[in-house]
Length: 185
Image 1 (cartoon, rainbow, N blue to C red):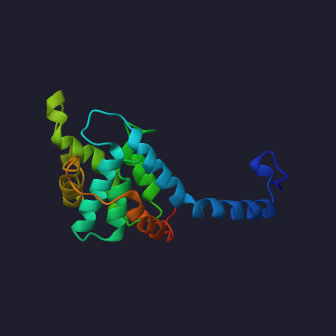
Image 2: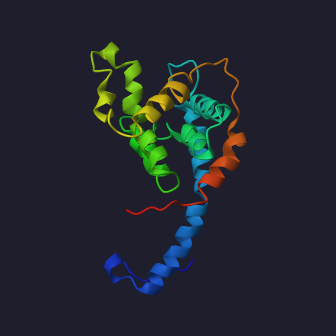
């Protein structure tokens, strides 16, 4: 397999980077496959709940779909906890970073902050401030994040709730991740 000539990025040529861009494009195209695999791995996530993290994610996405949310929100609901295995203390930020180039700023903000907003339901049991989310009270998407947590997160641990399976959501994931929004570093 052909590779670039450089061993330090500073020594790369325009041709080297054009070559790498072609490889990166193919790799980015396979992102939905990697996301679906990561979601499947949530089946074995930490225990204690009545359902797995995968089932929680599917229930969240199913509820968003049944509420006639747009496809970005449904996919965001599906992926909102995808960061749990690798970033248990900052899973919201990880999920938001994955979504950022592909969803609106509003959806990105909701996912990024849902962990803090979700703590409303349990923080007081640990003598923490359940209203910590109020630091964002004046943010234009505050109520949207409250809504997300109320309707697509805190209530999505019901083993009796009929959810769609992962394959059902795959075309939505593929569509959302096929169109990059206006994104800059």
